[in-house]
Amino acid sequence: MAQAFKVVIAPGKTECIAETIESEHFQVPGGPRIEGALFVSPKSPHYIPYVTIRLHSPQGDQMWSQQNVQSEAHFNIAARGPGTYKVCLYNGFESHVDVVVDLVYFTLGHMRRPGQVQVPKGTEENRGKDLANKDHLEDVKRNVMVVGELVDILSGEQKYLHRKLDRHIETVKSNNARTFWYTGLEVLVLLAVTFINLAVTTGFFKGLPVRITV
Image 1 (tube, rainbow, N blue to C red):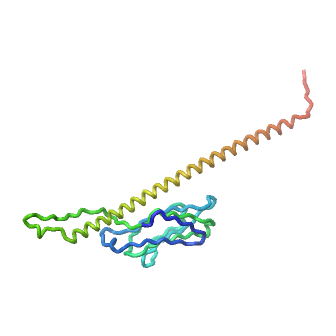
Image 2 (image 1 turned 135 degrees about the vertical axis):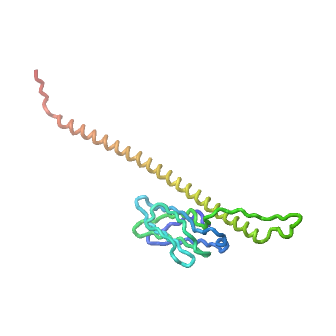
Image 3 (image 1 turned 180 degrees about the vertical axis):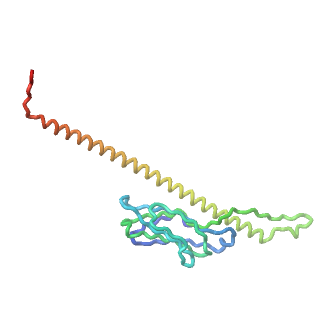
């Protein structure tokens, strides 16, 4: 499984990340699917990224795509047999900035839970006809494989949620800092305007004769 892969992509450039799925994963019934999640962020906060994501099958066909990704994306697509799958990331010229793509995970999983395997143990009277055979071991192997896939996906989702939380915390800190400095600047501007008004108003009355009437 591709884990925590980061890449910087310049405007107009494409980067592809490959993951090879062996044929043994397709011997397990239950609909194998290619799943992944990623984050997109610009190198400069003054620009908005426009990233296009394409998922290609081992035959080179485009299985899935999403355009104008500016923050994050998640895909879960039915697999098309064993081989090398590619996620290609294109940073459009309209971004005008390098973007950082954080591929949190990219793996294969099955839409099923591991089943129960009944392995006969035999009896003293008829042990020869009721022993475990190779087919039972294959069932165990397939279920272990499914458990491994589920662990990979759960681990990837956990990392995805942690990264999302980190991004929210950074956004909150950035907003707090901007609010603090903008508020301070606004207070300074208001004080300056107040002093200017006082100076101008006081200047109107300077040099004028004062008449006292009884």
